[in-house]
Length: 172
Image 1 (cartoon, rainbow, N blue to C red):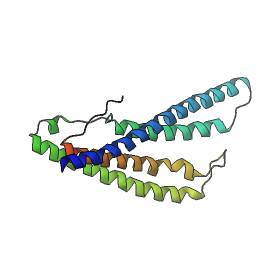
Image 2: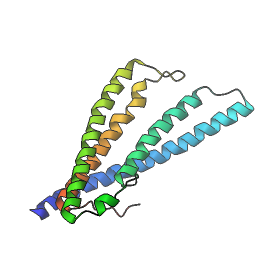
Image 3: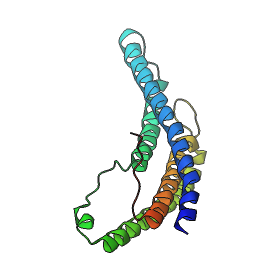
Image 4: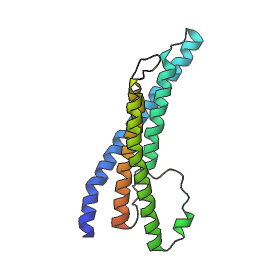
């Protein structure tokens, strides 16, 4: 039974790795874009008249970078965690505590998908000041990244159930 479940886990881990390979260059490109836009803003203010849309674009890029990079950090287990109490528990209790915590995170991220989607819909009528961009695109990052975190949490939960612990990837 365990080998069948582990064979089910392999394609899920490949999907997780594929998502990671998509997110990394997107965050990198957004960071490069942010640097370019801020540089344009500084140069235009010093040498010419200020370009009006740069402040708005940099703000939107920063929001998207924060959520997407936070999702990458979440997938890699890089967020701050205080684990000394759980690590001190006997093996069975430690596994149960980690499963319970993972279920709580899954419930939170699924709720965030729903709430983020509703919030995105509520803001759909609003347009940004200088670009006249629908704010739906700005707020779409909330349900998108929450859905990705839900997926990552689901895979972590399966790993905890099948292997007894989360297997850390060798990727940095």
